Amino acid sequence: QVQLVESGGGLVQPGGSLRLSCAASGSIFRVNAMGWYRQAPGKQRELVAIITSDGITTYADPVKGQVTISRDNTKNTVYLQMNSLKPEDTAVYYCKSNINGRYYWGQGTQVTVSS
Image (tube, rainbow, N blue to C red):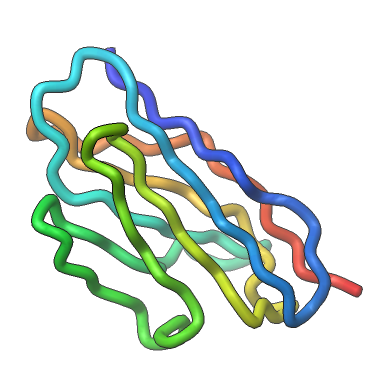
């Protein structure tokens, strides 16, 4: 069994920052790409950022320059540093990872940007 657990979400004021974490646990032999997605109310889930096992990153256009994805392979953990947050960044943020050749999703963590 493999599990992804996100943390770090919460309520933040516009212009603030948050750092999300997603830790993989269980019977892990190889962690390949790890990524973050988000789903705002009434909208489809969308890509935020992806990082490969070699550290190559890809960002969705709307968040370029605003977020930074990173990972710690010793901890099987991926991070998402989000800065200059706006109300439109409000969403449930999900972690997705390719582990042992299969894709897994986390349960999501709520990020609310509001004054």
